[in-house]
Every structure is written in structure tokens, then in C-alpha cells.
Length: 383
Image 1: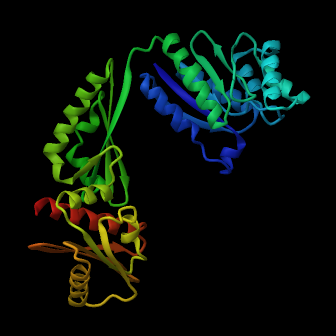
Image 2 (image 1 turned 90 degrees about the horizontal axis):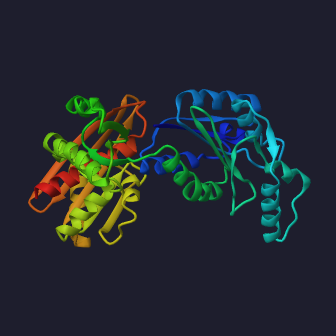
Image 3 (image 1 turned 180 degrees about the vertical axis):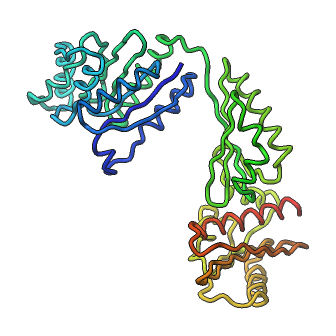
């Protein structure tokens, strides 16, 4: 079974609003095992809405739309979906009564244009909206079902959880779940990682995919199964393979960040950390700002001295702050590019790394912070 999501609103296309509805719906569909293969956005235009809905209906078992159900002329979703399904919109007195009651609860009276919200495509199933004034509706066709909900996130979420998801599970006889896990890595590039796990990326269930971030790469494992237990087993099998091949590069799973992974190791070893940086704009300290209990010293130098001077300054800061670990990050820029220097100082272990970037390379500071934290974590594991 497949689904598609269409978000409707010219304000989305103009960049005036950020679409958060698609992400919320996608998570909900995953929980009931309904595959989501496409999402799209269309403006407030009857013809384009009808065209997009018709196109989705040809591919998907369920088409879910949000937005365009307000009372104004530029809320044409009802008419667009009716046109796509080859029917007219009809007035539903029961919906109009619900809308008037909702306004009454707000201490207000609906205006005449609010009557437009009581019109839905002929033959559709109305969805009462107890938290707003825009009802949703469901249109069942021979090959697909179109579900329309308001675009206001709080209203959409209420209708999705209480009406739409139960309907989809029953109507499509959904018996599976889709479960994902994110394996987070650092110190290894996306292209190199792709070569190492190319065979895993060709799997059909579970599926494996990569997502690159500055200095870090996520590996997403997604399994579709009848039960949570079966999905966990499928995911764990791929995780075990990843541990065998790239174990040292894996710093966490799901919500864990590289920063929190490093801090957890420092806590485990009873260490405090001193930071020294130059040419970074304070990016290293900013990345660890939420862990003041571990960071006992931080200094952002205005000038970059020699390696000997910087190393001595880090050791001095560590002694003053009684820190057991020190991390130095400097960045020097020129017309040809930039060079980052990372220096890690631990009891009985001192290590220096250099990283060069071309002049046009984006996110250099963020990448350098990731690189510095990667090496600190790696040496903490070895200590």
C-alpha cells in the first residue's frame, strides 16, 4: 500500500510558511506501515490542485492533502478535489451546524463566507473538526482514497490522530509497521562509506540509505514488518554488520549527537575539558555550550600563534581549570584555502591532526568542529 501527501497553499511556495505537516504525517504513516513514496506542494489554484490530486490518485492507494479549507476565495481545495474526482461540491447542513456551534464556543458568530466550509465533494465522508472551524473530508474512489485536512498544524494533527489514521488502518487493512533507526558516524566521508556498505544499500527490506552532514554521515535503516519485534530483529541484523565494518566510526544512534557522545565519554572517565580555539569564531565552544558541567575552561584567541605557543597555552589553561582533557582547534585562511589544526591532550596521550579545505569549501567551521570532536572521542576510547 502506498500513500502520497500534497500540501496546498501559495504561501508555502512563496517561502512565507515552513511546511511542518508533511513530516508529522510521514511519521504517523510509518507507524501503521503505509509506504510514503511522494510528497508535493501546490498553490491555491483549482486547476493545479485537481491536476496534482488526479496524478497522485493514479499512483497511490491514499492521497492526503492539507491546507486550503478556509472560508476565503483563495481556499479552493474543496473545489479542486471535487474536480479531480469528477463530482460537484454540496452543502452539508450538519457541517454548517457544527461550524456555528464552534463559533458560538468562541463567543462569536460566523460570517456568510464561513458557509463555504460546509461544502464538500459530493459523496464524501465529512470529518468533524472539534478544534477548529474547517472540517475535513474523505473521498473514496474505485482505486484510491483522498483525505483532506486543514493546514493549521494543531487542527491537522488532531484529525490525523483521531480520525484519519484509524480510518486508514481499517479501510486499507494495514497489518504492518515501518520502523527506522539512524546510525550516526563521524570521521568517514559519504563516498567512502558508500563503498564500504554498497551491498547493504541494495537491500529491499530493510532498506539502507545515507544522509551527509558537515563532518558527519547518518546511516538510515528502515524495516517493514508485522510486529515491532520482527522489525527490530531486521534492523539489528544490519546494525551488527555495520559494527563489524565501521565500528570505530559509529558514535551513536537515533537522537544522540557527536557532542553528547563525547561528553558521555568524559563523564564516564571523570574528566573535565578545556577548550582553546582561534580563527573559528568560537564555533567549538558554541557546539558544547549546553554542557557547562563538563567544559571548565574555554578561550577564543584573536590571533593564531605557533604550534608551540598554542600547545603551551592549552596546557596552561588545563592546569588553571584543573581539566584532565584539552582540545585545541585553529583555522587559518588564505586565498588558496583553509587549514584546520586539531590538538588533543589527554593524560599520557597527545595527538595532532591537520585538515585542509579548498577556498570555496562550505561549512568549513562546522566540519572542523566535527573533525575535532571525532578525534577527541577516538582518543578517549583508546585511553
